[in-house]
Image 1 (cartoon, rainbow, N blue to C red):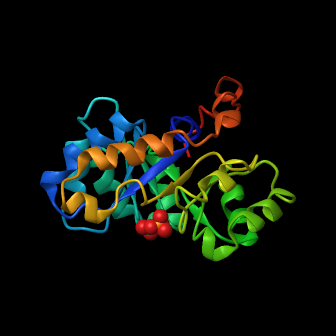
Image 2 (tube, rainbow, N blue to C red; image 1 turned 180 degrees about the horizontal axis):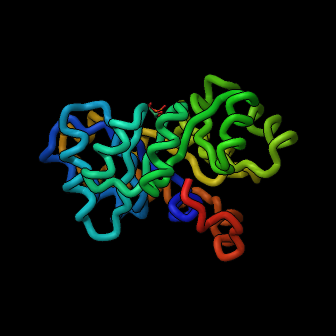
Image 3 (spheres, rainbow, N blue to C red; image 1 turned 90 degrees about the horizontal axis):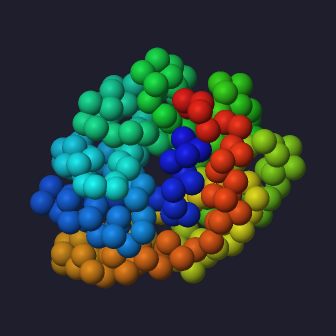
Amino acid sequence: MHMICRQAPVIPVLVIEDLAHAVPLAEALVAGGLPVLEVALRTPVALQAMSLMARVPGATIGAGNVMTAKHAMEALQAGATFATSPGFAHSLIDCCKEHGFPLLPGAATASEIMQLLDRGFDLIKFFPAAATGGVATLKALGAPFPQIHFCPTGGISQSNAHEYLELVNVACVSGSWPAPLELQKAELWGDIRQLAHQARQLNNGHHRSAANDEPHSAKVE
Ligand code: 3PG
């Protein structure tokens, strides 16, 4: 999961309502410089969309909103190469480990982080980021958990993403802002490509430049 998070500073969270939009959306985001895409399992076409998007050159497709082992298996079969969850369930973790399916589980409190640490995770989605104290909370969590890196999600935008990415314990951020539903509905792929390009310019270089030194990159989490 570490290697996936290092591919770009921002992972767009995608809510896809129209299957016909899946491929042009993925192409626009990849062309804009964001190759890692999280398709939220929140619409009826999400699994089919993942299958189509997984064939777009350069795209790394993950499943978001993965709550159960059943969701994880469906996403894996649809061609997703990683799963993310707003939280975690031990049955979900067990399933992903059993199938070698990289998982980015979510946590918002110290106790949740401790449970994930106990299960071997050192890269965790911090959700809901802004509502749980944002940058100040992440800085505070860095003291007792210096070994944990986070992907903050929820309430992040182009204008505040840099505040998160500057933190040494933030690997990348994710959010819906690079692919707004209204731009998808209007099929304004050039505009989405431009939003992706802007997001790509956000700097988390101090993390990505250390990719070759990463001690945990081979772990399946
Ligand atoms: C979501 O639930 O859609 C994701 O957490 C993204 O949240 P955002 O829309 O605040 O970026």
